[in-house]
Figure 1: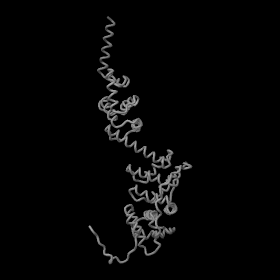
Figure 2: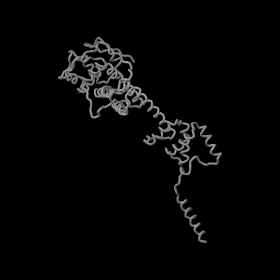
Figure 3: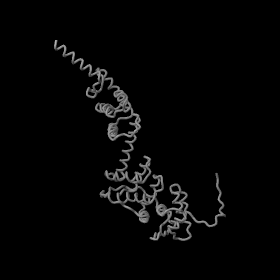
Figure 4: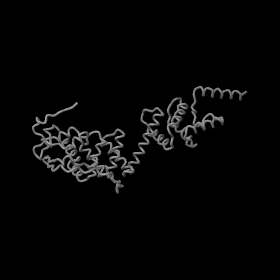
Length: 341
């Protein structure tokens, strides 16, 4: 479908930077576009927040977030923000700073961060920081690729906190955001919680965070394999996760997991028991068994020796049934009768 606009019927008009439509339209909230259009169409260089509120129906918090959004992208340059809520913004005529390249992470000199301190940044402070620090501006530009919703002023403050207080560099924050995205976690709050947790476990540099992401990704893939082999749909307990980590570290692949699962079902009457499976796998590990062929050879060896089971008597079910108890009592009575004769 094609559209044609009657330019001659426009009357007054104003300019909008091309980058708004070609680069930032997809990642910019509709309310932020309203604020931008209101500022660009203003007949004066200064415009009151109240005027924007009346024109758009938006509250001042959203307006402040919109100003931070467009200035961080380099579309607007905030010339002045007086206490009377008068905003003087102009279209940025100089090209926005080129994205900075990934820099080598430097281990923070001090990791002593008092968690009781809550860092809060005003809209003006965030804007000034982004203008004065190309790396922080690059963070604000790139982070939107991993977050579903347009980032607001509070979230920009959280990112600034990670960058300035916890000393995570921009590449480290971005790779963590990409990892969160693969998990289906698209919020800045989740990203912050994850990075602070890693910080407290002494994982701060790019290399350390990347290694942790690789470790977690490999574990998640292996756990999915275990769950599939065992037919599990519920979340694993902490103890079950320990077993999974142990099997992974021992190099137990899917083929061996399937065999261990079958033996567990045979030995438990059709029930999944992680301890039982671990006993089977541990016996293989102790013997250096790593393939299904080696398992088959080990089974043949046991049959050749006339043994019925790989497990000792102590590993079998020693519980008494009613029938066992009755036979025991009957045998005991018979022996007593023989002894009295």
